[in-house]
Amino acid sequence: MSRSSHTFQLTAVLPSSLTPADIISALHVHENCLTLHAFTTCYKEVPATDPAVLSDPYFSPTDTTPIKTYEVTEAVAIIPGVGDWGKKFTIFPAWFQDTTAGLKMRADGPVGALVVRAEWRVQPGGAYGEVEGEEEGPAHMLVEDVAVECAWWLMSLARRRVEAAHRDICRKLVEKVEGARSAGVPLEVS
Image (cartoon, rainbow, N blue to C red; front, side):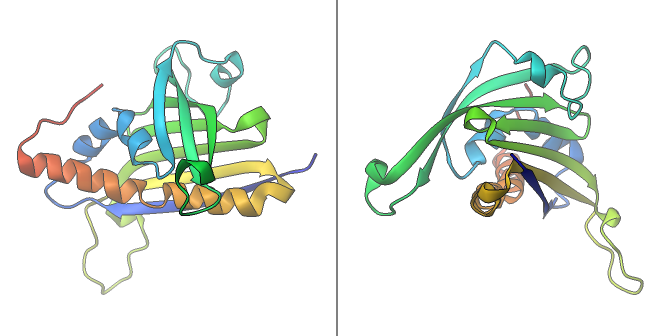
């Protein structure tokens, strides 16, 4: 069956009160990305990682940066306004690998119908098209690159759902870290 792919990018400006290390530390606590995902209802870490995932060239070699596996449950409203009865619950595996600049994630939908890869990284704000004569841009940005792969006939629905689910993760993560910093709560590192 012919597969199709779609990529998109989301960004959030880091306020001057936060350092890149603050955000990277927060990304390394996988719970942050899992709980900020719009459709996630629950998750649990599971011990085994699929050998096919370990050999996925998307991930760095696992001898230096291990991959953690989670079983994730998502709920998507099929019939709005009728509670859980109108929701479709899906359980799927997701794999997370910490990187020096952030985090990589891969999630596989049921029977391989959908593969989502996302990479969050902190990078200098100047990397985003400065125009001569404009004010200096942000010092750093949190960037999320997302790739969706599925059967061509599913792409329209998959693209909309994945974009909706990922739309606010960067912004919410920055707000969460900034709120913790303002409240004097120490940032957890996994």
